[in-house]
Length: 431
Ligand SMILES: *Cc1c(COP(=O)(O)O)cnc(C)c1O
Image (cartoon, rainbow, N blue to C red):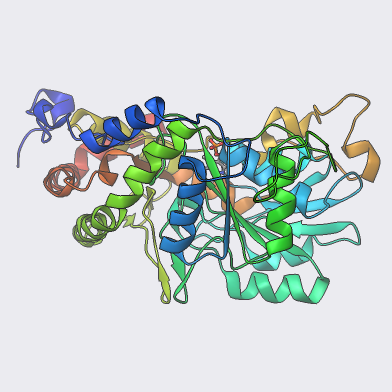
């Protein structure tokens, strides 16, 4: 049994593997950005073909969406989807208690109130039963998040949305390429938001986002909203008239050009990624007390983040707190060169903006609905359990050449598991 790196042994993952990083920026990406910089149009404020309109077309074609609207970020995409659906003051929007902060902020940006629902312990996605419990006469929409790249339970959510006449806006920021019963996520509901932020599965060189929808009229309202409320019609000069409330949520040509180049390589990357990740997870699935993420039947998982849960009892550590086992494993695995980290340290409703209702002044938007505020530390038992007993692998596994690195990660896990007595000592000391 080899000695753990945390106690003076050799790290399993040599330092020279640190070059496998995400995003992977190639010469095609550099050339695409330089060409766009030398091109005639850096912004998409008038009619006609440019890198932004080409990205919209290519994305729609690749993923089989009827309409795609490019915007400045995934957060802007979520807010604009709600705006285009007419969601505003007095409305409630149900969102998962476990997600990136932007999912909870988007309704507030529209002066609607986010209502949080707990999650499923296996997929980490919004729990349809809890969604149904939290519906009130004010509820107008649900934002399911395909968290970590795993599709949410769209069958049940769609049925609930129909029954109560609610819109569904999918937060697919982490899930381009994921499918649910053969359909790409994003346009199963009324609208879907993607993020092209540089760490996501299909990145841009900075910030960007995309909206998709099956509804041409909704797409037109999104386009109007992204550009000051103006209508940009084919073959007509820009008239600078605002027909409705608008923002400046436009994407620029450099960002679009970079993502166009990445999109060309996406299928090849995705094939490699599926093979690398599933091979890695199959090895880890053998270890006792470790639950690996899975793709549910009928879905494709985009593996944006790999979340592992640890069970003290199955590890032979009855009575040890999950946080103690988690911190022991984090320390030992990191010393072996596996960058285990936490993703989302608290449930969204515990974030101060929501628990203290820091909105637009005068208690808006919460004072409009009289909705009860959330109280930090209460409710959401599954979200809390998952945060307490899990760690994630992020970014580097997305590199198409990460197969050998993931083999080394698996070696490191096996080494730590072979030293379970040391893990137990550390976890008990921390407990
Ligand atoms: C990244 C992300 C967003 C926000 O996207 P930005 O482009 O960073 O604004 C929203 N929701 C989820 C789940 C995300 O991961």
